[in-house]
Image (cartoon, rainbow over all chains, first blue to last red):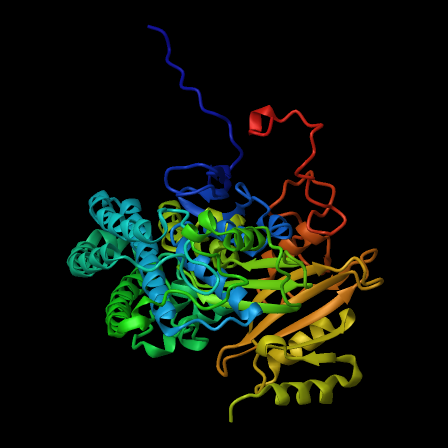
Length: 410
Length: 168
């Protein structure tokens, strides 16, 4: 019988306790929903430190914008927060209108609000249902996606595309909303509340979901403000800052809605704030649809402001009339010089204050254009929010922040 | 009493005298400039004074004016007083050959990445920043792409074999 020897790895005294593991989360990982890399230092399952790497899909939009006339920049804004690109498009058009001094008719404002609130819903429903996926509830996500489809069908009816919408023009829309668009909107307004109530019931008092989200990734109001948080993430920390209320644009002042706020700024509060915002958006949508229906006669046909120098002529005219063809090319190629000036305009995007800082030197293209991208600014706080917590919580925190790589990397 | 632009201007000129200049209100936003050495003092003053209370840094970026000799780079701060809901724009200019500007990241945590981005694209050296390295571009890059001296590629060039990218 041979003697059995057990071999131990010789380690200095106490070294196991001191040992930490370096883990690369991302850049492409099923749980990060985008190209996000985090180099984490783990002690067991606890996060000791983490450093984010960003920029994997940087596309130099700010440089490209310096060569593009106004209309060619709209397609760049599509690709910022692609979960709610109509808001970006509208924000850009509103910035141009501010620079050019264009006044939009009330009906245009209300139609814009319909589109912006629809995209806010589509943005929030993705974020909230993905939080479900990350905590183990795939079903809610699969069901709610049907309703995003309804929203995308409305976009299609108005502008022809779904994800990167390029919707609207300076001064209004490219065409009036068709009856089909309104019918689809009615269908959505009727069916979505039922589905949203179901989604809410699935999560809000769900023991597993609550245990996974309550207390994870909290941030105080003070720190959130210092970190430049805006949007639902700031409101979850208890600050009722909303661009729609503070600096109303596109006639938001005509609407009656609440700004939901949270308390602790943890993942659960972010979920609840987004959830409540969807209800508020539904209320705004109902009000806006009602207001749109109140226009009668010639007023009910208004879908753009009268700005022939910046608003593209009708397509039928472009194909048949020389003048219209000339103007079409002049506008698309940016032959109309902009006024000189510096404009900052912001809208309440899906993730917070989406700002456009436009400097014009009077040429055909912007001299400089800077996008204030909310998720770029608040993603800095991620280490502070997850350090000391579990690795699995960090994943939930990341999805509750609704990081969109396109917006982050510009 | 709500905070007005006149009051902000008055308080700034009281404190800094001739150092703050070029007050203007393009498209309704009060804007002014100061020498770059004063940037932190101005920001701290705007932050601390209870009647001014500009404690939210909305945006920080830079602009390159190649013809503005000695002041080629402008660092632009957009500040927001959330209680009185008033925004201001504050600019400091710097020479492109010595682009040193004090960091605001100790005052605003949000300035950390915004300054890194500004460094990445314009080469503004934020003095005192803990981790001033490139953020969106690759680390190996040896130029600052948003400066005007680096034009975009000529779209009509024909000397490049670019068949794989749909141009050939």
